[in-house]
Image (cartoon, rainbow, N blue to C red; front, side, top):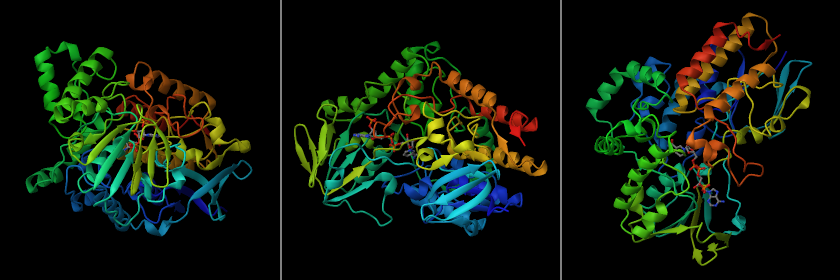
Length: 531
Ligand code: NAP
């Protein structure tokens, strides 16, 4: 009757796994992918230095022991090329490509109540009908260029980090500019600085960064990792945000000062997100605790940067440590000790325009061969906004979410029947593949339930949406991160209508999220409207 039982938009980590699970139900599934290959985030973000910030062995898929046995990560935090190889390996191993149509960007998806189905249109105008629609479009996949006059006029080479070319770009002998100092900018800057002729970093807001401490995985470590996958994933299931790290149960000021400093010193010296995710339980809630930790990290920055005037510019003033996503770095601060690197604080000297030859601030004109835009994404709702999604009665999702997303468990939206979101707004982000696997398994259970019971129209109820959205908002109360502008609070001033903070993320614990969703499934999805 329809072209497909289910259309999935996106062949990244979530779309690939969802395809596998729906095949098991015997459904006819098609994945539409805008890129020429699988991998989503890891397909698009080929910028120099792109790599994991969570431990490789906690990030890969956990659903197949064979896959875990046969894949060998080479570093504690794998680089993008290795991750993309891994995802291609998964696509080959599970024969996924035959149901994925590449070079196929979805431009519209309209629901019809008459047929209880979705009409999906691709950019080339082709159209397909499907009973179910699953968005696997990622929370950080709609890149945004800065709103700066003259961006089009630059005659050298320029790239957004999330649209990096497949061919390598050489920086040798080149004058390079990087705009943006978020997690992407930091990774890019520290890599480009290794070979560049001269690098200028245009920083609007410094972020609190912490050392990644990456290294190759030794043979002995490899044996241990491979033997302990069940424990690794069990640990991820227990922790607050599915990382290997989880908050220390002690309050900051319950611990004597010397012991506290020693604890922070230890965390600063350890791998990965420990200093952010494994710190005292109150550092992201209590202003004084957060200030004490921020002072500790500021001291580290001052120790690592030779020129103290530059160090002061690199220390954030408008937010505390961890209240924005912490970029993990490898000798990032030392980059500013290189004689061929310059930091321009664009709060002090704003960029006026991009010119044919470079960048003009209000006090100087800089000439460049290459400009790199590490200016981020229209996060969480942006990838939805870029598709003309219309639900029952022609209601546009963009209009429905004008004042911020309203969802049921972050998966369903009232008035958008038969549409399910993977890693949509109001879901637990954290270590994303762990959240994805849970999300996909839950959606698969829901579709299997519909199949078994002859349900052809499933939808969140108004009461269900209100209760979940209120819950998500209440969880955000008191979090210092919700008082700060960042993609996590929905701010992107390069996009019209994204300058008011919203609660876009579920900030409760991942175990609590799963418990709530499991209860709904165990109860036969009675909280939904099923017809
Ligand atoms: P981001 O955190 O939003 O950073 C964007 C940067 O561009 C900020 O420094 C921002 O300054 C600057 N910017 C934006 N518009 C500008 C303008 N008009 N003029 C000057 N500067 C401008 O984006 P991101 O660095 O791409 O990171 C987004 C998220 O992706 C991360 O937080 C993380 O969750 C994820 N990520 C993950 C990894 C990993 O796991 N390995 C790596 C990279 C990214 P303001 O701060 O002043 O707005």
